[in-house]
Length: 344
Image 1: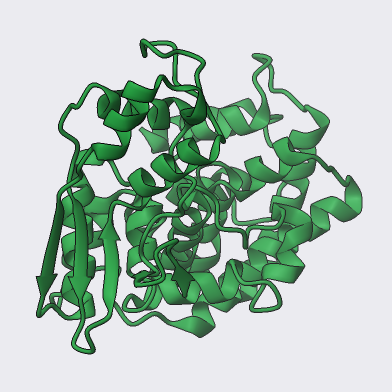
Image 2: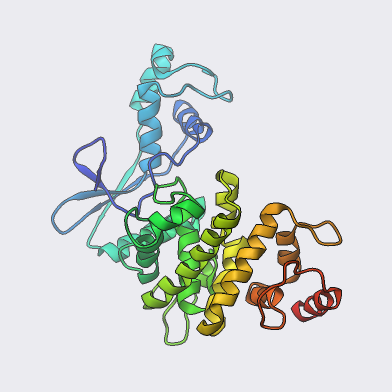
């Protein structure tokens, strides 16, 4: 559990990391304080044991603390541009020190209600889907499973996947890794790429049959493990044939919107006895992409797939007859035209 600088407060796990704001945004807050503009209130929850939790306001408190510590100076739109806290004129520094930020305190909420309040309160400042998911890590089965399988060093597939996706267990500023991990795991468990391999908050929270949303649905861990194993096996096979390194390649492979979203559906919508063929086909596809193989129009192979094929037809694109992919998936022009027609 993180402790705030005031040891009387604790920071709940669902709070965003304390370094999310850019320097420019921190400077804007300092300028507002120096101009005596109104700023949003701090929200504090008192639990049943009397412990105080800083529910909202961590970014503002951090920005003020960093300014006082000399981590950055006033921005270009401020009349004290370039001046640090200690360099402010005495009158301005006194005005800064006397500035009051309202604090709202509330009691009587459960942790789940506190999470809901946090998400509703942040809607106006555009929380990412990943930050909202992070708030649900203690209550959502799919978030918990995604963290265990993909985002925790030494657990699940993380250490094996590090070679093909890079290390994803760090607390990235906007929790983008978590939203991508949840998309892959939800799709693997539930089997519909279009509906569940998504970072769309509306889709993730939309009630399914039985009243559950994706976020509250009991996940099939065996299925998730099976599908993720197949996807990682594909990348490992591609690395055996043509290994690539560098952040650009690793990020491309990690993002659900490129290869992995198509593969999720391949390994959930087809019989398991066919999956060895599909693994081999996807390996060849990714190697071709890495080699810069282009079709007759000169378009990269991944771009062609994304332009003409929905996720659920990815395996049909690679295996139009249900057989392993040929060395060049574009060599049969009639086949390509037929696929374009089917995908409209």
